[in-house]
Structures are given as structure tokens and as C-alpha cells.
Image (cartoon, rainbow, N blue to C red; front, side):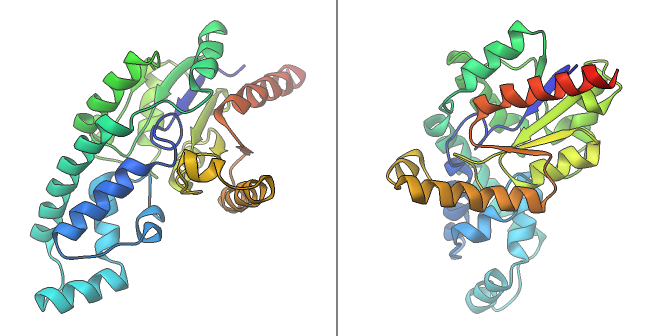
Length: 264
């Protein structure tokens, strides 16, 4: 039987489209005179933010812009300065964008009703998560365990360290009894590296990159096309399952429980 579900935060349970970090990254880099596209940011979304900034600074276009502006490539001090700006910007925007996605409370209540433990992993720091966690709690979403890379010696995604930490805390030895749910490829990598079942969320995901309003304005045909694009990306990362919305997770849990019953 499934004993625990581990959710991501932005784009999975809160912040439809994972907008807050994108806005904060753009603002922090713009403060340094560098323009970023959404694609620049989203390709490594889900990583610990210090690592993510490092990845962005390695992009060819970013290095080109930096060289043109400063006549040299960015160094570790530059990275620290951008990270500090990013933290300040993100904490500001988190207060605005921490709204639960549709279906989160229904799914959370289902999990509680059936005694399935709920934990989370994230690319956010503990300071960032304090803002998100408090706001989510006001809205009724209260996971039992909220883990950041700071709890595991800085080992962020795609390392399995946060998931293994949660399993130890929950006294779960069998990874087949755990599901990791996320909206980025890094979420799936994290779950695969830990040996747990993985589920990708399509709608409201960072991979789709649309706000709720933008998605709702699409025609039915366009919505199907965008879901299928995201589904292919998750499948290419070897996700075990891909669902449209978080409430579809209930069907996955029931399917896995039934399969395990038959096995035994």
C-alpha cells in the first residue's frame, strides 16, 4: 500500500504556472543588466536556487551579455550578489503568489482520510518556505514534513537526499510505497534517483509555463496540445505517470494499491 506522498510546491500545489520564481529570477538578473527569457529560467526549474543561478550564469547568451556589459565573465561574488537579490525579490512575490491550485485540498483530505503521510521537497530555502508554508496553512494545506536542501547538507535536486530523509523520518523502507509528485523534470529525476514512483502534473506546471488565465483562454484543442507537449516531456524523463491535475493522483494511488494487493 502507498504510505506516503511527497509533493513539490510551486507549480504543483501552489502558484499555478510557477510564476513567482520566474519573476524573481528575471528581476534579479535585470538588476545586474542581464535579460532572461522564460525558457532560460524554466529549463532548470526545481533545483536549489543557488544551483539554479549557477546554471543560468553558464548559459551562452548570459555569458555573452555579461562580457559585453562588464568586459569579463561572472564570478562567484557576482553569483552571490544575484542570489541575494533573487531571495529578496522572491520572498516579496511569494506573499502574492501563494495560492493553492485547484484540487489540492480535496487530494490532501483524501490522503489524510486514508492514513497516507504527506511531505514536501522544494528548491526553495527554509526562509522562502516559511512564507509559503504559513500562507498554505492559512488555506488548509498542512503537510506533516516540509524538507529543504538545508536539512540534508545542501544536497538539492536531483539528489535523492531529501526524499530519503523523509522516508527515514516516516520509517518507510520500501520506496515502492512512496510517490513523488512534481511539475518539473528535476522533480522526476529526484524521484527516480530515490527509487520511488513518480508523477508529473501537467496543468499549472512550470513545464507548461502558463498562468491560470492564459490556460483558460486557450481553446479545448489548444489545451489538449499543451497538455500533450508536457506529457511527452515527462515521458522522456521516464516519469511513471503523468496526470492533468493533482486530483487525478487519487486514481494513481488506487491503481498502485490494487497492483500491490495482487502482487502479494
